Length: 434
Image (cartoon, rainbow, N blue to C red; front, side, top):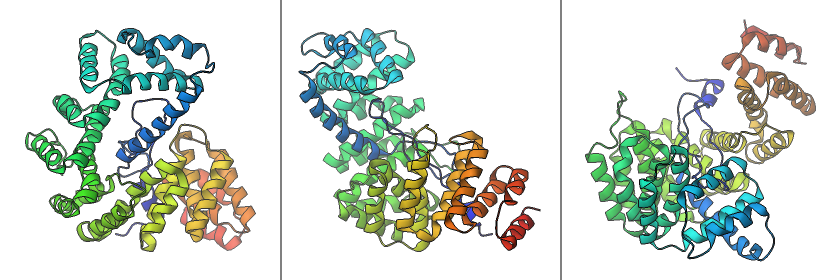
């Protein structure tokens, strides 16, 4: 039975935030499960974007280095001076505290540390990781330190990261898995054959085996996406063959996970051709939507617009991309939903699919109010009424009532339906809620 538009909306999950102060890589990958409140994984593209941002901040820090930057940064200078031995135990405490506190001072402090770590050779970085492994550190401290060292190692010698972290594939540690996925993509850019051979060896060894009845392994599809992201550019024929070798019901997720460079239009052409030729028709919109989520995570609505302009989508595919882009942008932080957020998303949706503005607004309000994630029900309902009255029709309110009844509380939806101005639409809505 075909799903209604209300039923289809929750099947797209949203993504989570990028925080450049916290150097643990951000989790922003799209996993299509039965609800927007879905599982969170990494998008490799977001890491690429974060690395570029980090380099920008390092350059800015050089300009600031001769100025006063606060007591915390001064206290941290002893950790960042070239040639000064690093006390990893003390440094772990500093990093964990910075991750908790955030703020501009923390960013400058972290940049100082990154400058020091980026100046280290691969051998020095590996030696430091070995030293940290021997220390009796709390798990949180170890988890804070290791990514700081792995990040510059990924840039210099990604193969070392693959070999070092491969034995930990079975730990089911998302941080380790995403670092390995980044390393796999980086290796594939240098030597696609070597990277593919390494990955296939891990698959053959059972390191991605799944206990799921359908055999689906989200981690393997994460890695497949990382590899495909490099192969689409370097070896598009190999990328097509690899995608074709996956089960039909896993291809959309794998290719949707591919991290594409926003500046390479050729990649998008190959990407679209792969989806059209290798992904079943019902799943193509989902694959395109996954990529839309990645693009908006990297550069906001402007970046999503560039993605939508680059590929000729069907109306359903375009809607899926618009919905996912909005979901990613709105739910990419734990902050409350503001009027400015809503105005921005409505303006963008109106520029892409104006006929869907009311529907998308209602769905966002409903999702934001679920479990009071970003709004409570009263706030969401008031906004739905406000937007309906401002537009001169009841579209947002009717869609919000329908969504809330289907996903949360039918009784509350009935009470709110009484505020629908149009008598015929009010009666029809109440009839649906019987």
